[in-house]
Amino acid sequence: MLLVTSETMRRLDEETIKRFEPGLVLMERAGQGIFESIMEFVDEPGDECASIFLGSGNNAGDGLVTARLLAGAGMKVILHYMRDPEKLSPDAFKNYKRLDGKRGGRVVEEIFPGMADWKQRSAAALEESTFVVDALLGTGIDKPVGADYGGAIEAINESGLPVVAVDIPSGINGTTGEVMGCAVRADVTVTLGLPKTGAVFYPGKAFCGSLEVVDIGIPDEVMAASGVDDHILDIYTALGDLPERRPDSHKFGCGSLLVAAGSRRYCGAAWLTAMSALRTGCGVVYLAGPESIRTAVQSSAPEIIFIALPETASGSIAEEAAESLMREARFDAMAVGPGLTTDPGTAAFVGRIVELCKAPMVLDADALNAFEGRLGEISRLSAGKEIIITPHSGELARLTGKQAPVAPAGRIGSLRELAAGTGLTIVHKGAPTVIAHPSGRVDVNVFGHPGQATAGSGDVLTGAIAGILAQSSGAAAAARLGVYLQSRAAEFAAETTGERGMTAGDCCDSIPHAMKELEEGCGL
Image 1 (cartoon, rainbow, N blue to C red):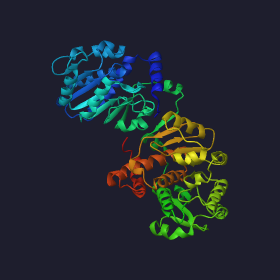
Image 2: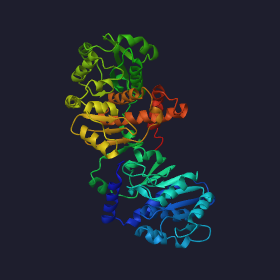
Image 3: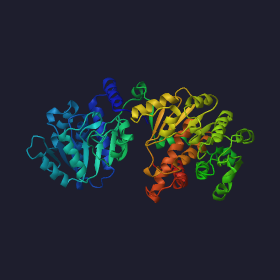
Image 4: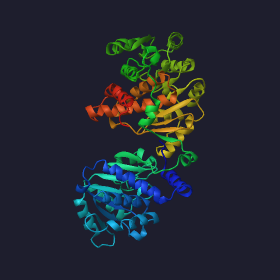
């Protein structure tokens, strides 16, 4: 699914209205989608009361369509207007008039801004209500929220009621995710047409609750003509990236991975990487590491085939190990980096390995540090093979010599520029993780959990990506599916351990649950 800025969505709307369908039709579809999302958690409409807060733009029009449909289903609706109806946008005003047949009595009550006791009436209405619909501001806000809207937002947040936000919680910049002074905290955000960057990047994401997308009928040709190539990494994308597993497969038919990782100081990183790869379904995983960690690895994971390598005085892999390892090992993909340390001899080993290896690779952690200031060198070496790099912001800064932008558009744009036209796929770890491909495509992950902020999570991710890469998947699919599996596994693990007690090992152990869910088509 495409991911757009507020400005791009506005242009898509305008082009659709200009060439295909009137705005009223799009507004009706939006309201219908919001209505259907609400009805999913409603048992008996007659027992519910919806407080709908309305601004003056098309967001209010979507709210008015929703109000008409809820009232038609037998639900009481209370409309809190922030502006006189005559100041509504033209399409919103038409939907205001369409409520004429339902006004009065129990079904639709209205609180207008001209009423002297508006604030008291609104507070009393919230006391009576069972949930709130936020149709105040929408995605177009680019300046601080005014005092009157700020008061309404505060009332919504303090009500303690479930909140459904229309398109994006009011007060959140739809493009940057910034909080424009104050913002509604929604339980559900029903976004219209396509998801907006401000809803999937922080801090905006934290205000959205669960994100649901309503198709309002933007034609494929309009979206194609926009040139947008930013995508949400969703379960449908992950399912499409899942490698085939034949019923007559054997272990080598399911991929063989060579992992070069670990040191006397960081043997756990090597174990997590290798075990994570096995958890993705990779048939054989070889772990090449210093002799001094053999016992620790093999006693805890006999499924891992250990290859002992010469080591430096500090207990990390020595430079001379590279030639013999590449000469003797047979594998479909390789992962290098977790727990290696920055020992000069080990850094030289990394450089030689990346040059000699002919198979697709995943480079992480100290494999990236070995190329400090030399991202161009990795790009050059990717000409003969696919290379996936998985830096966090600090590692990316060391590679490029400059800090990555924080704002969504800047971050996406800079990563696209770094990857375009190379053999590199860049997995920039963060909240959210962003994946940039050589083709120019960018994927933004919407899964994950704060519990992933723990030592070893990056090693689990490297193993997940490399394990999929070894199963005859290309770099694009491996990067996407590996990110999805690790993030979804963290969500599964959190259900058992909670946020604070989760370890990287818990996440690794939960990868099969994420894989099983995907294989069985659950959550679709």
